Amino acid sequence: MPGTGFQADEHQLVAPNILRSRALALVYREFRQGELDADPARAILDGITTLRIRLLGDRVSRAAAWRVAAQLDWDDIADAEYVAVAQLQADEFITLNSGPCASGGRSRHDRTVQGARALR
View: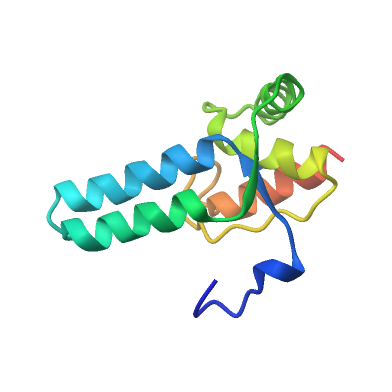
């Protein structure tokens, strides 16, 4: 990925199916709010659709996400899908998302990583 220092050829990217929908929703929201023009938005969409990433959404990963959310008492299963995929693939969980969460003001990243460790 240009400008990130990350070489996709060295690693396989894996994520839940929800990743593509969330990314498209973010681009669309920025377009609708006038923060992104149509041509750059289309270029981003093309990049998303051609990104070499393995998306998982089978019965096993959905059940694992449900279990993660229930064990950690999370209100939403979406974040649990990412944790479940990392666990099922025995991979490291990496996120740039540091938005606030309901548990004591810790970042969502802290909450998710701590949750993933607790479930091992």
